[in-house]
Image 1 (cartoon, rainbow, N blue to C red):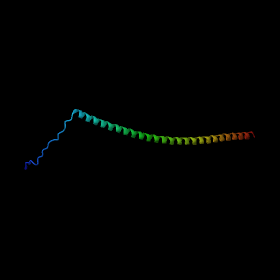
Image 2 (cartoon, rainbow, N blue to C red):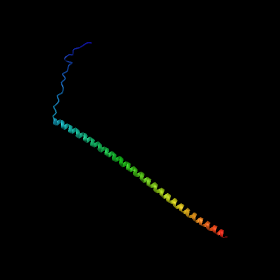
Image 3 (cartoon, rainbow, N blue to C red):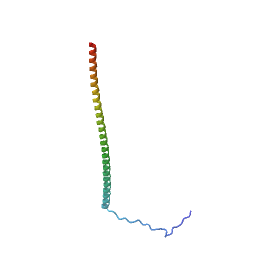
Image 4 (cartoon, helix red, strand yellow):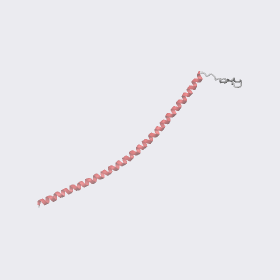
Amino acid sequence: MNLHKRSDADEQDVTPLEEKPRTRKQSQESVIIYLVVLFTAVFLLILLSYFMHQRQSEAELSNLSDQHTEYRLRTEESIAAMQAENERLRLELEEAHAKIEELEKEKEVQSND
């Protein structure tokens, strides 16, 4: 193993940069600014989340309203069809009763003869 001596030219004088001593007030101000920035970011994210939720809720309400309208129209059509069928069946029943009465009268006439 060869050991080489460094020359003075290779060695650089490394001195740390001098930092200005920070006062306690400056540190507190920095922390307060940092907290204000963080709270502002959190507030903006909450606000963004609120508006996104509002938009999604409005879309869902619109969708549900459309579905309700469609369901109501189909129900009204179904009710109208059932009422028409009910009226048709009522008329058939009246005709059947009339036919029964007619047949009973014919039977009575035939049995009297």
